Amino acid sequence: MMIFDETKHQYLDRLVRASLASLTLGISPTSAMLTYLDWLSSLQLSPGTQAHLLHKAVKKYLRLLAWASHSSFDPNASPCIAPLPQDRRFQDPAWRYFPYNLFYQGFLLQQQWWHNATTGLRGLSPHHEQAVEFGARQWLDIFSPSNYVLTNPVVLKKTIASAGTNLFQGMQHCYEDLQHHYLGKRPVGAEQYMVGQNVAITPAPSVSLVVRLAISPKLSPEGAVWNSCATLF
Picture 1 (cartoon, rainbow, N blue to C red):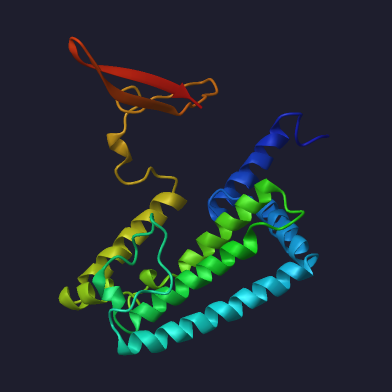
Picture 2: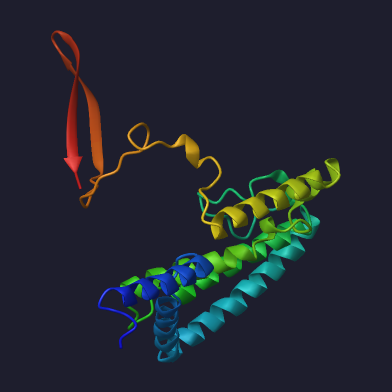
């Protein structure tokens, strides 16, 4: 006598995968492992790249030491590496003082090195390269000095000023997020998004086009006339 028919066994498979996805935040462990092994094997087969990365690591370390000795005598010294334009974590002037300037400068140099280590490898597929580079950046951001109280001068100042109440509020928000995630509840604030009012859905695959509208003024005898040209990519 069979316990499962042709369809019921799929329910068990979906239940196992759904339970695993709730623990891994929707990331497939098998896919992540294969991506990592692809990058690692490509790096092992590239001794020239390994030597180049070692040279860059030593060079960045000496560069940081030279900048640290110079900035200790000149507080207004230019940083040895600037954050990316979209990175606003270290814009506060408090990051320019010792030892916080060393924290964030060392982190940015390490971030740059990992970018070089995860991109441009021969034999690594473009999809795996993007996944490894993104994953390495996410893991590295966990150890960013902006994420910890003792290494973030802005948070440390606010913690002292509020007598630690900001940390209590942060722990409360973290507990609420974990509770909503593992209990299958909707995120806080999701109730303000209503389908058909401010959220659109479609059952068919959607194709998004980036539309660039170039508008330039052109004078005519009657006055200024606007000519527009739309280009689809």
